[in-house]
Length: 522
Image (cartoon, rainbow, N blue to C red; front, top):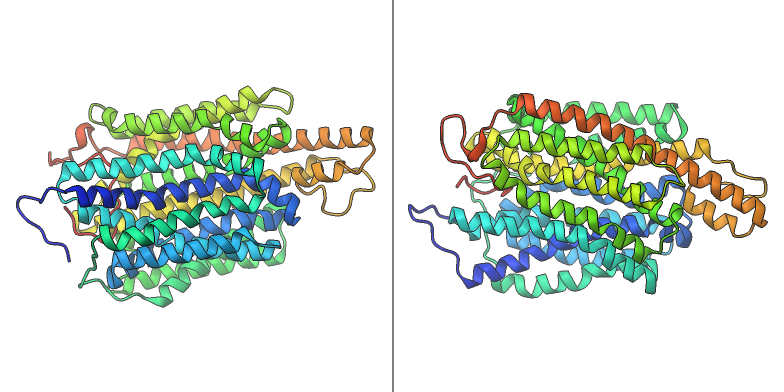
């Protein structure tokens, strides 16, 4: 149990070494997302998944992380944060090996699902332990800034490391990155990390856990199927089931003494506005990343390694703006900083919406860099606005909701916008006679199928496929423009937190995003 003192104890060498250990899973999770997107063409070639299976391979990981985050936060309070972190690390390592040697799409989807459940134990546990280890506010701010930076560094390293591995090894090797990281965490964690559990934590309501998943997965399935094949009975029924389960989940949370999710938090306009902005921004980011990484390889003709290098400007821009934003927020209202960033993202989406298959890689890379640069302020300040909008005693619940919205948004972006972009591609590509059924469903499949066609037919097929794929990216870019501008205005108007990290009563508040779910208010 943690204790509160009038003069918080300064963290020593053991705590800072522990921080290095806690940064490892954060680095890994951000690398893992970017690596898989880069590997999509290679997975398509090796396992021959359908378009729907390919989307599930990518997004089941994020869905289950989002679905289990709050659950794992409650479980960590009960059994111990360190214990849950180590259990999750072991499970993640085993699931990574299973994904590495998957021989068919179904096995890879199952392995990715296991990685998602295990991954849900890592993020809330690391942040909760950081808050417990660093009781001094200034040291805690530095520690969390390091944690956030590692997340951004992982996004930067993922394409380069993954590109190099795809260049020289088989596609499954990208999942092996998690194994040595988790082994190191398992060895160092018991020595350097303290244990923490909340003796007053409420019981874990398994019915709520089931309802939360029953609300998310059917809705995502329905949206994906409607985007792919149009309105039909099964996906509509799935949507209805998901909505009904969501309604039952909300009602149940309002009756529990210890709910998984406290919906009373949504009564605050700043809270719900920022949360929606984070969800929608991550949704667009997920769909955009999926298509840009494939564009560079399948339309631009870059190798995985070169594609990874071309993504570095975007990652670098994200690191810079996420680190500069807290300083800007000390002088300017944080909502304005976020709104300006969203406007920059909108400019990047405009460039992606106007790109074509022959416009050159430079336009796409520049547009993508602007999208990421504009997202930095939201990543750096969004969670702090959410947590600062909630009462101090509910900071843990608010941070869990914030983290869930970002993970769910990213996964929904891949599922929903990925399905929309794929539908646009399939409606625009001209598949010549002699191409096996399903081979033209994705651009990666078209590239493989073209190898067995006469040269003139193959050239026309690939030109059509690249143009249709770019049309899909254009649609996602147009959606991004509308959402970025709309949420920029909404945040600027609704969120009133002043500059300098002080609340409306003049009390000092940190501008560093703190998501220590399950921890007492500092």
